Amino acid sequence: MTDKTHSKTWTTVPSLPCVAIEETLSFWEMLGFEITYKQTRPYQYGVVARGGSELHFGRVKGMEASGNEYNGCLVVVPSIEAVYQEFTATFKEKLGRIPHTGIPRISRMKPGTTRFTLTDVSGNSMIFIDSDSGEEDQNTWEKADDKNQSPLQKAIAMAIRFRDYKEDEQAAAKTLDVALRKAENEENTTLAEALAVRMDLAVFMGNRVRADECNKLLSQLGLSQVDVDRLMQKHGTER
Image 1 (tube, rainbow, N blue to C red):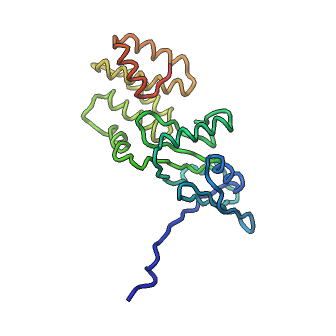
Image 2 (cartoon, rainbow, N blue to C red):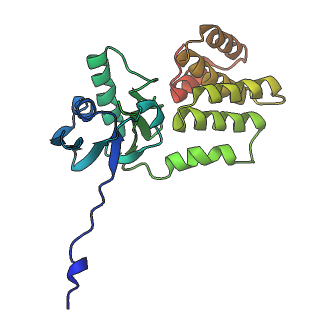
Image 3 (cartoon, helix red, strand yellow):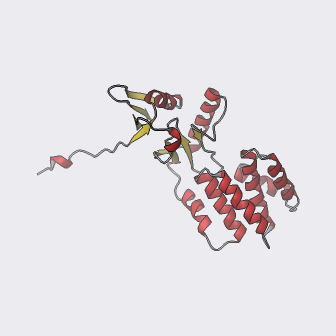
């Protein structure tokens, strides 16, 4: 005999908080989502959809976007780079800039990574992940815990963890600055990579003086231009 209580597939639909339903739905519509449901009375609730998936939102009275960044969900998509390029192009067209800080914002997607975080106008943090990411991101994250590397190599891995997975450029920069001051008997290639990552962070944070310092130190290591360009490309570093 069929158990009718289990004959239908279960569906889980998380509902995320928002400051105001109109503003939240408009934000996601700007990014190519379709508003499939909107209710303003007796309470605010709305749904957007794209690619066969839905995001549900409900207004929470008195909430502030700045304190909501622990809420969010994972969004698994094909061709993550194409999605990222679309979103950043939309931001640039609609806002005149790509917001990497504040609310809303989109994290930087560095070469070789398979995810980015999009924080909406209500502070919800949506992590977009490539459907074919496999173990790449996990390996990058765990590299910071690998004890079979030099102190500076470990610092580089930790800085990348802060930069690419926690959106904490300040912590990444501090980690590298401390490690570079203490660096002894490190390979020039390791020093060069640390300086390339630190330069990237300095440029992002608008610290032109520190970026120039790193660039000067990098040029003194005697690496070929091919090797330097490879490091710059690997970490998406701009001079």
